[in-house]
Image 1 (cartoon, rainbow, N blue to C red):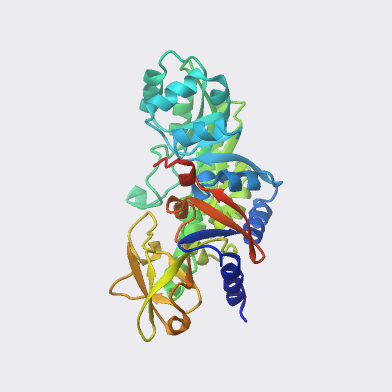
Image 2 (cartoon, rainbow, N blue to C red):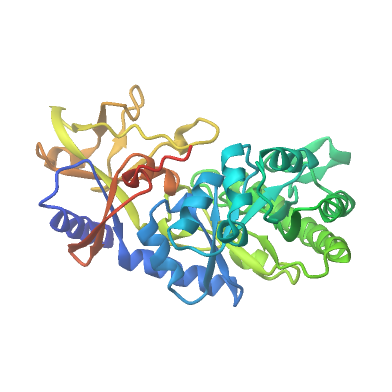
Length: 400
């Protein structure tokens, strides 16, 4: 029996009492992935991206481990909720226009001390000030650096379109603008190199493309390391007591941690290891989060139909955004139908061994987005479910 077949047998036994659709997290895999992130971070603390986990119980579990410190949130509402739930250090990784949330933040000393907001434009400071509604608490601010690689005089850009702040001078100027403004304090700098951390460099069946990605990423890492160091020097000239410099992501942990300018690493998807992380040479994780759909039809030889399953991930639409049929091995989508909202036909020899009611296990393309589809996660240890915990959705928290 292969390791994957053994996992399938365990998951089927563990969830025999549960009807699908059902989502699980294999705790042994989750913990092993956490250990690997800490190892690759080389002694620098790992800030956990809540967007990639979306389950308070699992955030508490990973933050209780050595090597992890603090959370990274994706909305202001999530940030405030997490602090009120007992978490103490939350970095909001994206700018917000949540006026009501900023009014709460500026009026509450506990929230203001625990939440750091992201800024890359003075207009965002204007919005926060206009939303204060009399709240006088100092708002902690992190400045975001654009990490994109620019070639041929800027005519070619590689990387996400995030912050407008690209040069050390631009970031330092915003730091000065914040320092001059009452009610704000710069405490950190963040730079997320998504074109390195979030792009696989070993795509099966595409050797030339994979080599091109590796060359691009090597060049991007060199350029960014030099520029990030210069940015941090420029900001520290304005803010000598800068608390943190955050960088990285699951796919670039060890590379980013090697930079002296970086004080902490951001990661989260590496705890669940969704399918998009199968194509990396920098690390190998263990799939920890899976969901199962039930077989409801057997249309013919070599075909079964499962209920639902059309859970595409965000980003540019394409086959790599679809969940992948994982267990039993050897199933694939019908190219004429793909993953459907209500039903999904699956092709392959294993279909003939599946009965009505059997589970087919899938891996989502991304990490936390799975939790937008399920109210609960069943935590598996060995061949048993040892706990069932709510996702954000299960607690009535759908922040986007």
